[in-house]
Image (cartoon, rainbow, N blue to C red; front, side, top):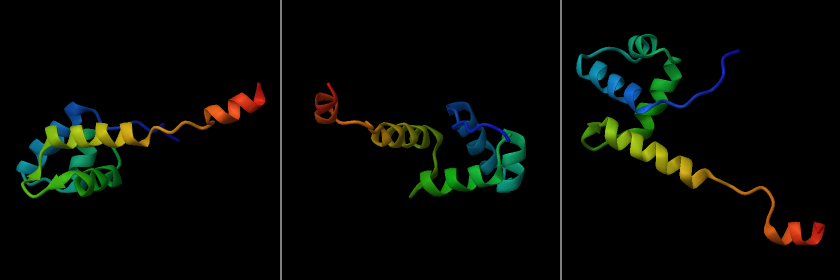
Length: 82
């Protein structure tokens, strides 16, 4: 099984260029080297009113990554352990 990796900025620009050339999501996935569901999710999450824009898509992805950071054990719990 392959390991999970997030799309990098260059891949997003490649997706954008291929969309402009009217490639299908399946074709884009093969060219970029990711699963077709990755392309589907990328477009669903990051397409705005003006279409898919790679710079905006990358910024949104980074923002979601930052918001997702969770701390497993609270400081108060560590104080009890000590």
